[in-house]
Image 1 (cartoon, rainbow, N blue to C red):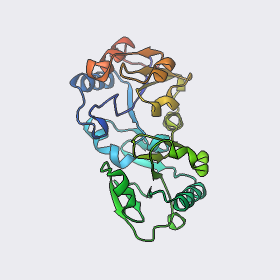
Image 2: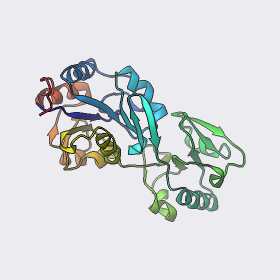
Image 3: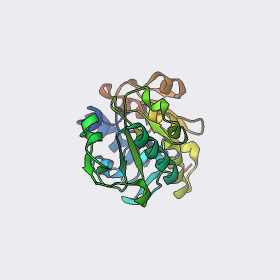
Image 4: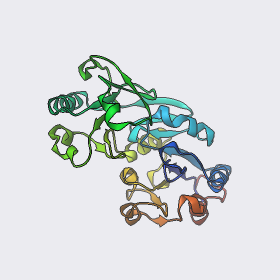
Length: 263
């Protein structure tokens, strides 16, 4: 068994309970312990901001992480970089939102708080996943970096935003969309390049549509039993659900509990 590089999504893969990830099955913790003892590399791979994921990363014994939809890299517990969104395109989006009276907010640093020019974003979404801080006169032109933007609208209103077509985005909540990087494979390759490791030795584990960018032919892809059908269609292995020991069973099926060598 050659050393493998395992990358795990969080929500629905490692942890359950929605965006609060209130529990991690004991079988999952046991699987992580055993693959590490066998000599394999483990990392988190999440769309979440690094600041919102680092607590779980440490709790589960990880030292490496792809965050921010693929644009954040943490290696050996050190955040190396988060690549921001294209600022000019975000400015165009916010200008269009202002013209159309659509509430918006921005994430401009690696802290668990987004900024909004007034209370309209929170009044519309009532989202408490992260704190919304009102900054009067907030203007994206004055922000050094913009890592995420949030647009408060119900579907299909997002398809009427012309400027949104030039930005990566996803809908995670009914009340608003996330304008953020969606390229987990990009971050995985950056970590693999850092360690001069072969892409074919990557194994990814995921369940939702924001994982689809890491379900590619260059490596092994494992879909959870609770995964979206499109994710399952791209998988090399479909395991059982998170709540049915899916991570443990997948690692067992892939012989990842056997000692890893270099060849």
